[in-house]
Length: 306
Image (cartoon, rainbow, N blue to C red):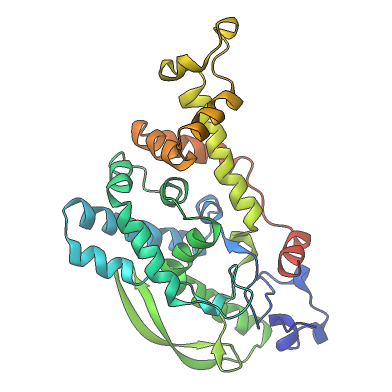
């Protein structure tokens, strides 16, 4: 049987299970197939998520201005703090967590796509969905890594509150790459945190988590949103409409076949939609919020114990 937060700290002896606690009861020896969902941070209006959103806005705003005005050293230092936070035990890795190696990958991906991201952000759509929907190779795990890196101070505070609530012992440990939103810079610090085999644990609220399939579903929803609003009745794609279908617009299967035949990735289309309409992300997020649901206990258990 795998050791989880609840079993390691004997909360099960108190009759507690995943359904009874507010945090994800993750396995502690390996990564868990569950992630932090930016859109749930955006949807919830609690003191904790408000602080998270302030940190996320600070990071993206600073990155935008440093990239826009070509302050390369500032951009480099800002991206340097992005990494996989091993203390959360979230991710795809089934063996040894790959930690800061992810950081260099994230940094390179964002740097390579800075121009398209900045063009999108110029419209005022300061959203991490711009990164997720528009940058190749940024999927559920990497967008979660980015968000967790930036909201780590709030997650540490949340962990400490949960430890106090359940009498979980903590140890003073060093934590690196803490985002200071007031200065938009990365700092180091010492924090009281629970530990397992000498390594710190950072708890994740269930309310801001999603499975990989649900995060992929959000991306696919945006592709469907984009097709409806930017492709179906767009004269740019009129050549895809059969004579007998005039007035009905482009068929999705014909559009997708066209992209495949021409080596055009859906993310290339997504970044074009975002840049061409300064309300595309905002309107999509409004649509998404009405259907976004909190993860269920059953979904958590299935994701953690596949």
